Image (cartoon, rainbow, N blue to C red; front, side):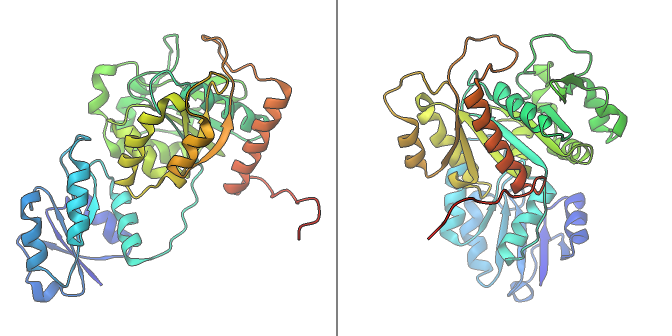
Length: 354
């Protein structure tokens, strides 16, 4: 099958070709007869939203992949809905070339297994404890004898109270030049058995980060650790948040029932990159703080699972002071996580099952 490309940048085309696909680059619209039974890939720069109906009418027998390039969260749903109604496949902005390739494979139903060691932590709102929960898991995974990197990739908050000698913004020149070396990871802060990189202190540069830089950094980190824990924070409008959503093998959301109204648009946004609520695990932080709606009801409403419930502790503590019973519960979940990533043997079930 051929992929006719109109308006796609050359680097993305090269990556798609390297993935084994036959790409035909076009400077003008191809003849509809030539694309019949094949795929046509176009961008919103070439085909504005208001011209999508005409595009579908012109190419009735082609699979059409529409790359929407206008950044900004608002407007996704309307464009995605229009594409669905016209039988077009939608790719949101901030999608990397690997995300485009995964979409093509999804359309063609090609099943290619890519095992990732990245666990992404996301928050349903600022201050929900995303960083603390990520470090809790990192500490327990490191206690199992694995090499763990914790990356602060919340571009709006470094996640560290002190000014550090190394942080994401200080590594930025190496990200831009794609010159991250193995020894760079040895310079990270050592905490509770794992290596920690504080996030971005230069909040004025948030929108300067590129998706390709973050994807490259995660790939280098993954090659230097058994498990990479990444704190992507609670604000979706950043390159790191989008790449984290796309590349994480496991996605955790730190939340609370009072944030139920925040989860709804969050899951809606994730739907634009082919993720559904069942692709996430909820970690209920401050679960002993009473709220009108229960955690269970919230999970049932969205169709997702609760991985863990953590009680409320006094703020400004470096790590959550869990009791023995709670720590055992965390360790059980950590073991399940490691089994799913192929890093621990599956425990034999005891008992008789009928």
